[in-house]
Image 1 (cartoon, one colour):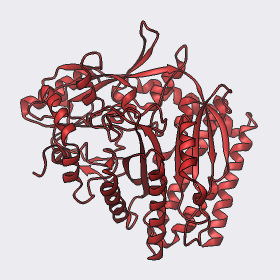
Image 2 (image 1 turned 180 degrees about the vertical axis):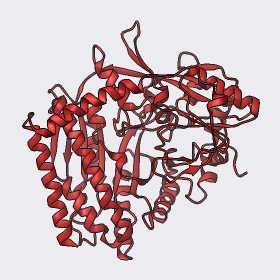
Image 3 (image 1 turned 90 degrees about the vertical axis):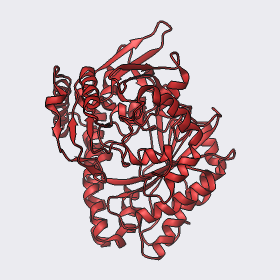
Image 4 (image 1 turned 120 degrees about the vertical axis):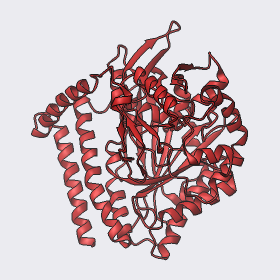
Length: 536
């Protein structure tokens, strides 16, 4: 086993060496291949932008088409599936659903682990067919990007970069293959502390309601309704278009350091957060040694962003090659991770290997979106993910406490030859949100929340049990709230818990919702119905 892992480590390092050698020689065959691929990518993007029109949802809807999300943990067969290509298609879908007494739910790229999209009625897929993007400059000098709900983040970034002047969204998810409609509807977030969740970047929404009318939401029109719309879980209608505040392009210095877990203190963390644009912490199990029985020698990986006036470290070509290397690495890693399902006892060897590959300290300057989307190919690795939001204590002590608790539990399970976590433990810290259904909602705009999450390969034994145990601790100790798009529905009694915890806010949300969907056309989700109304 150890000999095989040594060979594998050497293979990865040789692959990395080839990539870095290629960065120094722009005439290499690898670079020429990347140039050709970049040309092909341009053509593919142009082809995707060609939109059909005049489709009849009544005739073109697909009966009994099985739906499977990206991670394959959610599967169902709606009565009808349809891929709208424009606003009129969405409106016509709603009118047909109303006539036929159908419910409607939406899906985008399928990167949601929970059942939010599930329906046995009418499923709308908001994908690249619905991805028109425009940029507007207001009279006061502010910039806004308007993106149809199916637009991928990567496409939005690309168009913003090409603008004159180049622009960027202030904060976004690491993954750029997700669609903006799904990102906003589920209350997703990035790692930029002061920028809060992505909901706070949203300045306008256009939603088709249950009558087929296009409704507009903004703070200027009605701040209470906008507080509901910013994180709406698809309950107000079908998101047609999202408007996001953007700013002139800037650069971020991104550094990776590896402090010892045993000496990384709450004072260290608080100082980092207060002096950075963003901080993200990772822990790879058993990273000190594949024979470790405790965390005393383990390290963390701390990723830090700070605004910089320095030029980006990589040019456009080098960046493309760097991303290609990342995608290749995750593709190969996925194969080896799957072996853990066959032999869970080898988990310490594999996680130690992965951590050793990632261990070099780095300090590089990137354009903001390239720093935010720092890892390409994440979705090559099919995994499970649970995440909660917890309010940060004034001294940041509870962040360190809970990080250590997760790691201690990993080693406690190891003693019983159980290995529930084989990918990573991840943690981000953001300021609060004013969106009613945001997991980071708080009346105090200066409050901080941390978002611990645990990830493992699909079908990892004891992962569910591990998650349930730590979720119960966070709920009991902090009144923690789950990320809507991650796995949470299997946690015992969580729907009853959320029904009580969120009652005041769900009642405020309901007053808004009933103006746009009084008969519950879009309320076709058992979990959310339970959270709003209590047990069936």
